[in-house]
Amino acid sequence: MSDESDSGEPENTIGDLVPDGTEVPIQTQIPVDSKLRFLDPRTNVSLLQVAVTGSNPPPNYAAKVEYWSRVRPLKTSLMTLVSVGFTNRPGTPGYPGELQDWLSGGSVIATAQEVSSQQWAQGVYVPESPNSALYWAVDPDQPTTHRIGLLVERGSADELLSMTWYKMKQPINGLIFQKTPSKLAFTQVFAGDDPSTDPRQIDPQATWYHYHCITR
Image (cartoon, rainbow, N blue to C red):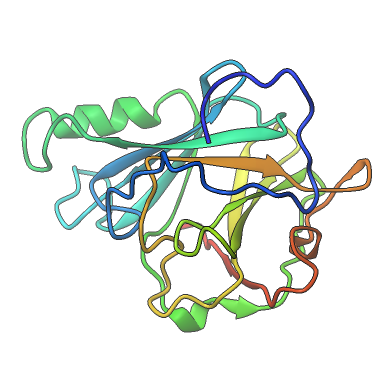
């Protein structure tokens, strides 16, 4: 769970990743009025940048929506999620420009920031695009026993089509994180030498629940 370079290839199936004690839960959910980025830890450059609006969004943006911007091709086996705060508060003159700058330069899709527990379906989601990748990470809610997954679907031009979250336990309030870490390491899932989109490669004994983010 660091952004230091790794000279070796990661273990991409069922791993032994455990928390290293450096994670600092800073919010109680994927926080509204906040920014997230997914970095390539080997180059420290952004791959995905996410802006989450609250109840006071800028003009032309909706309230409580996650805006995902794919700023670079997602051709990597490792990603690091980093939680970032806005410099400008919602409603202040600098806030709209900061949000727009955070998303600019990438292909943007939008999805709901909050969903119900019932919208998390048991089982495996089968992506429609062959250009898809599944990543796993320690679940910050239960770091010693549980994992989460993030399936990213991309189009033929590597544009972002959709995201699907996986949890080993159906969240009672529909949120992927009860406590959002400051950093979280994601590793691509493989079955042997081939990329896999099946969360059972993360843990074959688990009962998996998924939420397929509906773009809007």
